[in-house]
Image 1 (cartoon, one colour):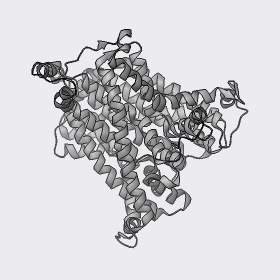
Image 2 (cartoon, helix red, strand yellow):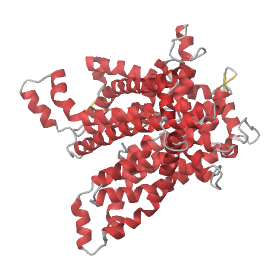
Image 3 (cartoon, helix red, strand yellow):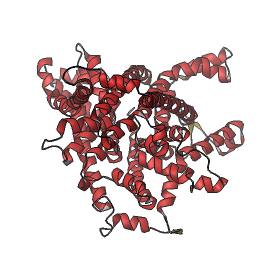
Image 4 (cartoon, rainbow, N blue to C red):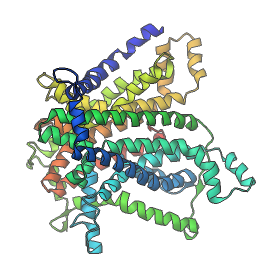
Length: 541
């Protein structure tokens, strides 16, 4: 296939990205920079305003603090998963990955149930621990949310560290911390930096957690944009804030993509260290005690919010009961958002399936082009293709309101699916790209030598080999869709309410039992998906 004709396969994905991502992005930029001509008035007004300036600085500071805390919590776990083998390892890693695709409102719910004034921890210690409605709560919730990124990325690379390097260092007298600092850490540093940058981006773009746990006292840029648009109807200020956020997130995303290249090169090492069995007797050693202490910390801050939600869903009027589940599945129970909870579940599943199909349609040709073709501007094309990962759902929702308001597409199910696809497709793209990089070039060349055309060789030879990566990307896309809140809340009519929006409205109405029951259903779907990922053994980061 000639390169000129080959570009035809990019027509659909590029048209989709232009219409549903770049045009809305340009509309935001135009709103913030144009008023009878080019102007920096609104951006200058935002920067000069004490409140907005404090919000911008706090957003960066909390993202940095969240990243440091997440890496500190994740590194010991990455070490354990990379070095040791123990019963239930795959199940535990799948469960620990679930928080990443949980709706942020569910994360907030878990922390309210644990650390609120009537929470479980508050009752146990007899006083308010002071975590909720503070910057500490935001950092802990972000660590809960992004903890799986560090675990999976760092452990994946740590397993590939050639043991001969450490053996050579041992023979030269390196021991303990000196061995880790001088030999192991430089080898796994690309994974640490890449996971840290991705954590920083997600914390920087976080919306629901600062809104619910931090409140307006600890507002981030996302909360500020949402308030300006949805509460004050000030589109100029909202757009100016969005432009500042876009510029900052693009810079952070560029750093992430650069670090991802180094990570991918190191991950290509095919030397796998055989895990050491962790036996019962090891628990009595210093290593075992350290592992137990670490496990306790992870349980309190990472696992217990999930368990708190499950516990709350099974309690009704102080007794064990399935009443909350009966209500969410009952057509007679019509909550405040205008349709039954069963309809909200159906909407989430339909939107999720549509997002999977559309994400694969967009991501597969782009992944192929980046993998197979060598052309001028390839690096820029890769950055532009991944740019949706650096955009926030709130900014995307604002762009859709500006672009599609007054068109037949506005307030339809398709605009929600389009928004979900823009948010989810980068995960499919990365999963497939990673899978393609692992295929040896001579397999493709052999297919060409036997007479197969380039695209046919890809479909017949390479695509079956990356099917596992494609399934992993599809699971992530589905999980991201059913967990999405920000853009859906801004764009959906009441009849298109999803599970995440329903949880948020239940939470706002203080109906924690219904919110918990719906959250458990989302948790079950996500856990099932990540168990499949563990069986396949592919990575998406």
